[in-house]
Image (cartoon, rainbow, N blue to C red; front, side):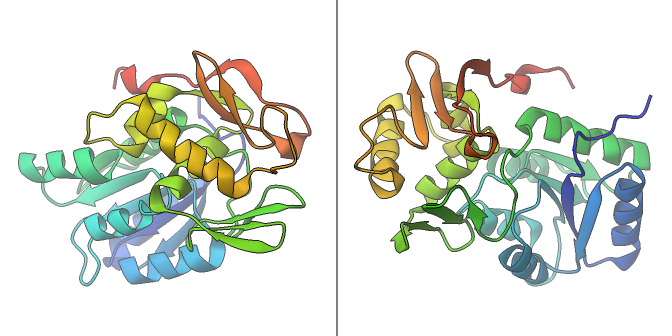
Length: 257
């Protein structure tokens, strides 16, 4: 039975090889995804600036100019965008570097259409749905707007600069708006290569809250809510309901391939 996304998720495909790009585009469109393409890392970054973040990116590893690794590095300065690398080599060192530092998964060329769709769906299931529209500037409510590429929050009409960690933290929480995101999941997504403790996360959360929360609101938090012993949630204001403290992010990192 074919598996369709709950909404038409947007995939950004990047490859300087026009033939490969057409295969990726047609395969994913046939599978029910909306696909946008770019022939270089530079063009892909420009598209994100104009159109906002996609749900997932598929990037060729070896491209002139900005490589797939460099594209991932730049995008991950302000988001936790899931990326699948396309590579012509299965060399172990290259694969390990890609998975540990840059990507969710990799596909070795040539690949079958079925493998491509299966890997895309697997990554999207693990990362989860994005509760807010992925526009260049994401409107939360009448007082807060987030500009991910420029790492800026517009709060009550004033501009607040966000650090890369603060922006990425917002991305992780907003992707799962209305759900409790476990602390260990957040730590792994923010600092995948470092052993870190929750105290470090608390520091960044405190600074982020000072920038975006309504200082007049003395409740649990207008946007970011602490769920004692469980994690943190971003209120799903689009649905006009509070975050559900009992809903947990599936720890799909432990799923079998």
